[in-house]
Image 1 (cartoon, one colour):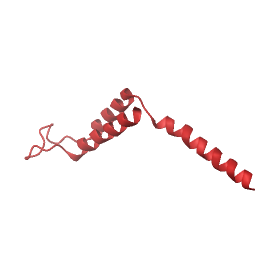
Image 2 (cartoon, rainbow, N blue to C red):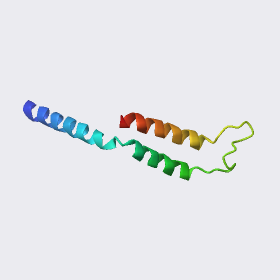
Image 3 (cartoon, rainbow, N blue to C red):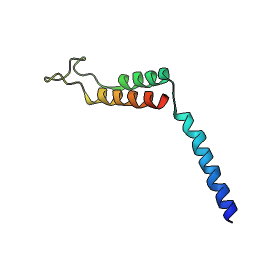
Image 4 (cartoon, rainbow, N blue to C red):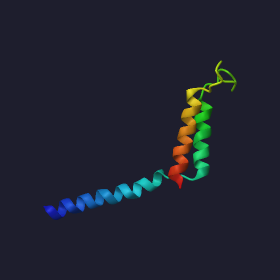
Length: 74
């Protein structure tokens, strides 16, 4: 029973390690994902920002997504 449990845990751990590599992307894939994200952002002010000059929260969210993706790609 102990041997089977150890084998099952080892198998699950190996599968998780192999699957985590599929999430890593190249820098070009990160740029593509960010372009798709930016395309979904509503741009009500045509890039001018609000009265204080701040951009929308959607743009900041896409920038954070790009940063995380590029860090994972390395």
